[in-house]
Image (cartoon, rainbow, N blue to C red; front, side):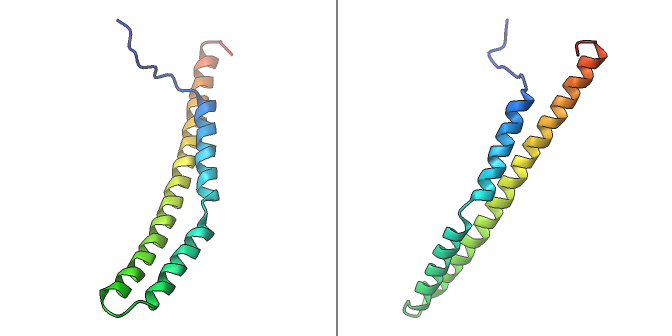
Length: 102
């Protein structure tokens, strides 16, 4: 019986995806989020008293924190994929050398 799952690791593909994820993290529209956060905070200052103002300010702060965490996590994930690709390629090369295939 053969498995329907292909567990073949392709280091080049893994490295390319890692680079794509890291590039997406670095290209995240931080300025757009900063503008939205600033607009929300400014609007909050013009809201009537009560809980609405505090809630809007808290939401603006959460957006800012969440965007920073997402960017950092995505960048770390992309870099980890690239490192895994290098490790797989190194292992493939070592096995090929040991068995004379390269």
